[in-house]
Image (cartoon, rainbow over all chains, first blue to last red; front, side, top):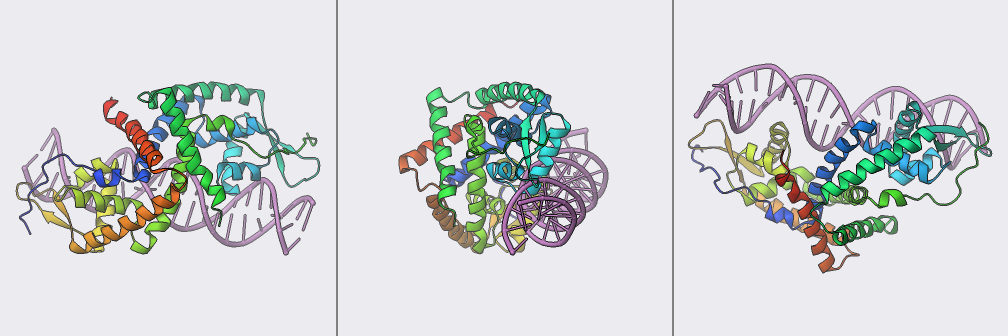
Length: 156
Length: 156
DNA sequence: TATTGTTATACTCTATAACTATA
DNA sequence: TATAGTTATAGAGTATAACAATA
């Protein structure tokens, strides 16, 4: 079998392009990479940034609640919260009624860091979605959110 | 600090929802998981499915070309191609002019497997995008593809 | 018994770097 | 010297399972 002709024309992925999931993955990986670069100067990673944002928006939530919000396991949250606490961006506080759980709060330093990070992320998004009009960005966000919303419905 | 009140209202992620990347990630992880489930009966994983599809569409392409098409490193392709070859779904063939590279081809068995897998993936997509009209699915695909297209342009 | 947080462990995916054989 | 494929290794990211403290 020493006789194959090399493939000449440019490589295509037309078949895969027909699938929404394929386009979704390509775009996601691209944006993920630039997002990591954008957050670099803050010392945050994507998941610590997300955690910080949710903690800021929902003061005194527990780690279990954060796990559910992030769609990850409780064990994964420990690492994220450790990292944020060690950087003095959040605090673990004891709760009145239940001594098993912690109430997570942003520190002032954490709020400042979050604000800075959000600016960098907004900049990153403007870059990544530069080819889309403001209306198209809204449409994309809406369509993706509607796909995501099916999850809670189809909880079997 | 034993005095924090627990967070009462449902946990929200409104701030993060404003970012396209966040919605993208949520939708991607959701679809990824169901995609793995959909492919399970075929024995294929997402990346071997994608590889098989691209090889079928571009007969006799090399592993390096496949790596570029999949946006991964050459070393990663070896594992994928090994897996497909061991399952007798593709063959590595020697090329005329260059004895360093392989020309990858789908076997008849590989074409059959690919067809079956594509049906399963189409079914999976119908399920995941059930809340979107046909037109909205096209819009989503188009917007994602346009985000992805920036990559080749912004090659610095 | 069930739940919160924790730890240890393992698995998947991918990148990096060093190697070989060809060119 | 450069390129195709290979191998070994390491690093994220996450899941699973078992555990201690508390409910």
